[in-house]
Image 1 (spheres, rainbow, N blue to C red):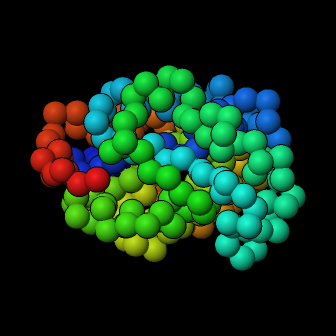
Image 2: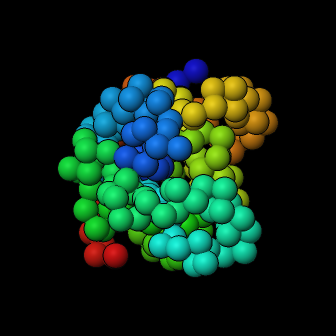
Length: 210
C-alpha cells in the first residue's frame, strides 16, 4: 500500500549516525555501512529538512544522572575516550551536510529528552517525522514512542534503519512496531520520497529558531 502524502511540514530525523557506532569501538554497529546510502538519499533529496541527532557521552561518569552512572561504569572506555576523540562526530558524508542549527545533541535514548526539542518542533509547525539511523530497538524506538506520545505523524524508513543486534531489530520491526499501526507507519526510502512533495514550502523554512 502506498504511503499517504506527507505534509510540507515534515522533517527527517537522523538518529546517531556517528563515528562512535560506525567505527571499531565497543559500540560498533556494522549495519551503518548498509543503511548510509538511503539515509544520505533522504538528506539530499529533501535538502534543509533534516535534523541530525547525536548521542552524547558525559565527560566523566560522575556527570551522568542516576542509573546512567551504572551504565557508563559498564562502558568506562567509551565514557573516557569518546568525548575527546572525535568519535561523537557524525560520519563523514553526513557531517558535510550538517550545521549547528540542524544538529541536536541528546544524553538520553530519545531525542525528546533533549531540552527544548519538542518546543522547537511545535514552534516550527512540524507535524510529521521520518526516522532513519541506529539503533532500531534502542534510540530510534525510544524516540518513536516519544514522538507518538506527542501526537506527531511518525514514519520509519525501513531500509534506512538498523541495529547491532539483528534479532532485536527484526523484533522491533516485525512485532513491536506493528502493534502501533494506527500511529506508526513504515515504508521504504523511495516510497517516502514519492509521498514527500519536494516543491512544497514548509512553514519552518521561514523561521530563525536555534
